Length: 222
Image (cartoon, rainbow, N blue to C red; front, side):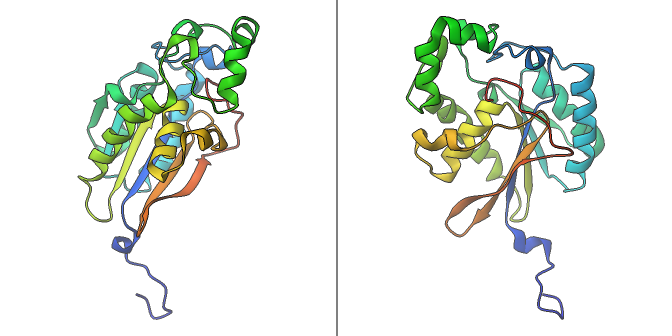
């Protein structure tokens, strides 16, 4: 503690989890539902990842894990280049599988599956396109994130590079929110992130949709 009474020791902070969404893809721009389809970053997306990586590197991450889909792995690679950290790729961090919705625009989904879409937005348990439930995504992703977080030093920082929907469900699960309330967490813009901090009663949301500049939310979780 400093002479002014302020806590300056980094170790007093506790563990942090930074959940970082991938950069822009062509399907984001076209408002096509990506789900688990493996879509590459655009040149804009690569630029977003490079800018964001410089900010995240300044936070001194101790470990990086990433979805194995190309858009997330390539985003993670920009941070790995700056920090020298290895990337652990985890299939469990992929975006929600959305069956027949994948590849359709939001307008096409509403036209063909309007009732299903509306039920999802109301927070009901819906297998979008015959795919995964949001709770099933949290079931696979949240334990992986926690497992890596537990390996951190007491003041360590884990960067998780994933997808908007998977990040939202993981945050909801780690905060102990009921699944019906996960929709209250707004979507993440491309290459923006949220920060969870370890508190006395569990994980707390410290930042949400943080990033370099305000951007619209383009993607499955908008």
